[in-house]
Image 1 (cartoon, helix red, strand yellow):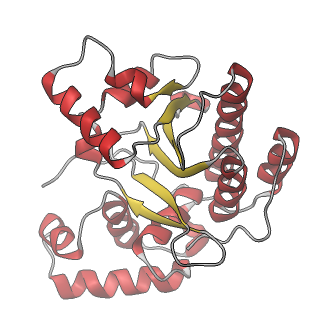
Image 2 (cartoon, rainbow, N blue to C red):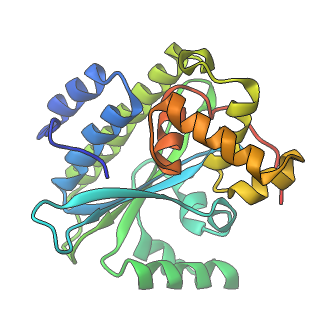
Length: 253
């Protein structure tokens, strides 16, 4: 669960200040999610362009709770390679609607199937956009709507683009200002964290690294202790903010 209780920016100026003052990736995330919520957004995804970069989705759950709560999960990076949304978002200046991508006439059969599945899961539509950082450090951000609504005005779309860009630049600054030594992680612990962030299970990580599953379990417990987290997704978020997950990683089974 992501705590937004201390962060409630209502304008771009307030969001910029919230991001500027954020000293951790978790705080920065809370600033962005609180602002997006004002636009009726209940789903936010973030996928860095670098090979091996994790893709994380944040979903607002309002079922059976007094206060809606944001939860996070990993996305399948391999399936995202089939997504025409990401490819088109990288070619656009302004955000594009998912339904517009689905209606495009030049999709392949696989891309059409991907879009049909996406709009079945998120029938209220959404938008995707690309954000840019120093050294070509870009990412695609997806924003899903909680309810059917009229298309946002050009000004509304531009404010969302600016909000995502502000948050991404602050993330880049946080990542540059920290190093893996900040948490005292060993090279092996960093390596395991990188594979965790790509969605690999402990068993698969053991096969990739040629070590026993018990050894991986021990390393993961030690990682959680050093990062002061209790789950894999939060560990990845903290690793992103510390610049631990920004190195390209070769694909593996």
